[in-house]
Image (cartoon, rainbow, N blue to C red; front, side, top):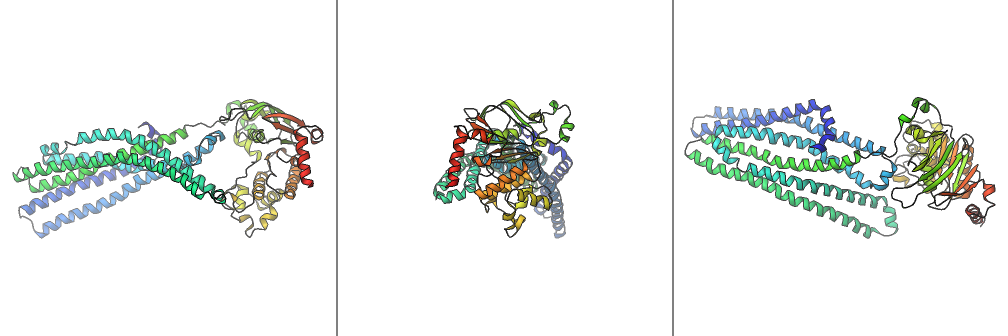
Amino acid sequence: MKSFRLIQPYFYQRRHLIITGIICLMGVDTLQLFIPRIIKWAVDDLASLKIDIKQLSFYAGEIICIAVLMGALRFVWRRFLIGTSRVIEKELRNKLFFHIQTLSAGYFDQTKTGDLMAHATNDINNIRMAVGMGMVALTDAIFLGSAAICFMAYINVKLTLFALIPMPVIVWFTRSFGKKMHRRYTTVQETFSELTESVRESFSGIRIVKAFNREKSETRRVTAVSEKYIAENLKLVRIMGTFFPMMILFTNMSLTIVLFLGGRQTITTTITPGDFVAFISYLNLLTWPMMAIGWVTNLIQRGSASIDRINRILNTQPEIVEHPKTIKDKDEVESKRIKGEIQFKNVGFSYKSAASPALSDIRFTVPPGSVLGIVGPQGSGKTSLLQLVARIYDVSSGSITIDHLDIKKHPLSDLRKNIGFVSQEPFLFSGSIRDNITFGEPVGEEKLIQAAKAAAMYETITGFANGFETVIGEKGVILSGGQKQRIVLARALINDPPIMLLDDPIGQVDTQTAAEIIRTIRNLSQDKTIIIVSHRVSAVLFADQIIVLDAGQISESGTHKTLVTSNSYYAKAYAIQRAEQLK
C-alpha cells in the first residue's frame, strides 16, 4: 500500500529484529499445529482401549513441553514485533514534531492546534497498531491459515474442500467493507481533531469562561462536538458491527459442514474418531486466521487513513526557507557577527486570508546602533513589520537587507540568532523562571542576573520564595501581565543580540516600570540596532527616527521634535497621552 511507504525506512532499520520476530511467531504457529496431532493419537488410543496411564501421561507431557516452548517463542516475537511498533511510533512522532516546527507561521494561521494534537496522538497510535498487531495478524492469517488447511487436507481432502466453501465469500466481504472502513475512519479522525481542539480551547480559556459564567454554554458546545464524534463512530460501528459477525457466521458455517459431513465419515469409519477431533481442532485454529483477515483489514484501513492525514502534513513545505545557492560564501556569512544596519526597500506584505495588504511600499533605513520607533493606530501593520525582519513571514514584494545583504541570503538560524524578539503577547512555558529566561540554554548565573536586572525584573524574582527556580505554571499564570512581559524581555536580552525587535514592551506595565524598561532600552541603544513598536508615544521619544504607520503605509517620519510640531496623528497622540499623565 502506497501510504505505508512512510514507515518503510523504519522497517529496514530494524529488519533483523522483525525477521527474528516473524520466525518466532511462525514457530509458535507451527507448534500449535502439532497439538491436534497429539490429541488425535490420544483419542484413537482411547477409542481402541489400547492406552494406559503411562502413555496418557506421555501425551500430556508432550503438550506441556510444547506449551512451554510456545510461551518462550511468544515472548520473543512480542518483544521484537510489538517493540518495533513502539519504536516506529516514537520515530514517527519525533519526525512529525520536528517537521511541524519547520513549518512557517502562515501554516499555523490556518491550522488548529487540536488538529495537530490529534495527529500526534490518535493517528500515530493507529499506525502503531497497524504495524504491530497488523503484522502479527497478517502473519497468522497467511502462515497459520495455510498450514491449518494443509493439515486438514492431510486428514481428508474432500472434507477440507467443503469446509472452505465460505472462504470466497469472506474475501469478497473483506474487499467490499475495507473501502467503506477507510472512508469512515478518515471522517472519524477528522472529527476527533475537532473534539480535541474544542476541549483544548475550553481548558485554555477556563479563567475567561468562569469569569463570564459561561460554563453551561461551553459544556453545550463541547457536548455538540462530542455528539458529532460519537455519531461518526456509530456509522463506523455499523460497518464493523456487520463485518465481524459475518466473519463469525461463515466460520460457524464451516464448523456446521464439518460436524455433519465429518460425523458421517466417522460413523462410516472413513476417518477415525481421532482424525475427526483433530480436524475440528484444526478448524478452530483456522477460525483465528479467518477472523484475523477482518482484523487486519480493520487495522490497516485505520492505519492507512491516519498515514494519509500525517502525510498531508509531512508533504507541506515551509514557506520560509534558506537559499544556500544564493550565498557565495556561506561560511563567511555565518562567521560574521551582524552589525545591524536594516533597510526596507519598497516592501509590501499580505496575509493569505486578508483582503487588503498589511504593508505597502515601506521604505526606510536604520543605521547600526540606532533606534527606530514605530507608532500608529491598531491594525496599521506595526507587528507585521517586525515579523518580516525576523523572517517569521516573508515579504510579498520588495526586499529587506541587513548589512546590505538580503535577509533571504542570510542563513535562517544565523539571522534569528542575531535578533532578540519581544512579541506583543508574551508567551511563557510552564517551567521555572530560569527556564523561561534561558530557554533551556546553559547560562551562567551572572549573565542570568544581568538580563533580569536589565529587564527590571530582578527584584521581583528575588521576592519569590524560590527565586529563579519559581515554577510559574501554564502560560505564567502566577505572574501579572507586566511581569510576563519583563521575563520575555530578559529572554531576548540574555544572548546579547545586535538587533532588538520590541513589540510594545511597556504595554502591560505601570508607568514607573515602563520608565525603567525604557531606560534599559536607551542604554542598549549604544551598541544595538533597535526597532521598537509601542502604543505609548513616551516609549519612542528617544528614538533616532520615528515612523507612523497608517493602513500599512508610512504616513509620517522624522524625530520626536519634528513630528510633535505637526498637526498629525503623532502630535495628537502625544498630546492626548501627555494630558492623561498630568491628570
